[in-house]
Amino acid sequence: MIKNVTIIGAGTMGNGIAQVFAMQDFNVTLCDISASSLAKAMTTIGNNLDRMAKKEAISSADVQRSLENIKTNTDLEKSVLDADLIVEAATENIQLKKDIFQKIDSWSPGHCILATNTSSISLTQIAAATKRPEKVIGMHFMNPVPVMKLVEVIRAYSTSDEVCATVMQLSQQLGKIPVEVNDYPGFVANRILMPMINEAIYTLYEGVAGVHEIDTVMKLGMAHPMGPLALADFIGLDVCMSILNIMYQGFGNPKYAPCPLLVNMVTAGKLGRKSGEGFYVYTEGSKDLVVSPKFSK
Image (tube, rainbow, N blue to C red; front, side, top):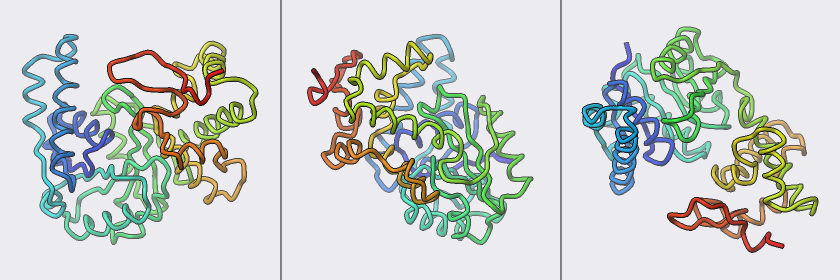
């Protein structure tokens, strides 16, 4: 039975994952090497819960109970000693993830399931860094985690049927809809999404249409809630480029190679919302999408 859950990484995905587990009364330990990141994460979680309470989606008692279900720690070893499930949500870097998994494999209980929130990195490579590859699995939550229903449950080559069934059931317990997929570059979500985003960037790069026009076509013509360029900004252009490179290397197919415009923007530090500018310019407090002067006619 899973009761104690450790989340590694207090960024956007990590704090969202911690929140959804805490709301379902799991004992959550949120671990990060940065104490300031943990404090920021707890503030974000508190604000998210307060907004839900104001909308009467949850009660004030639910807010308090959920916050009390989360403790924070900067010590990785202490954070995993009693864990039944660990969900790693650190930076998308294969060596970093392998290092983390080697450590948590040696420090956590033998029954503990080791999960990663990776959106594209090989689960089988990560599992190979442990002595329990049958207990390694992917739980790819979507951003924003408290809102989005999908969880891609990714089976590594050696993941056991029992572990997969447990994680599928657990995802449903969190109020999510799990979909089981196999371990190939990009899985399903990003294998389909990232080439579309890359093609939208190529369409801009080749002068077929402008930023606003491309996003409007996809929103009104294809019923997408957000245009691909706005979505790329939301995800982070550096993240998009990283995922495309992983698929390019994994499949060896040039169709996955990042558009030169995307590469230049990342090199220039124009990463989207997180940097304040990508295809659009982002001003704190404003909800309006304003096309970057770089792409304005």
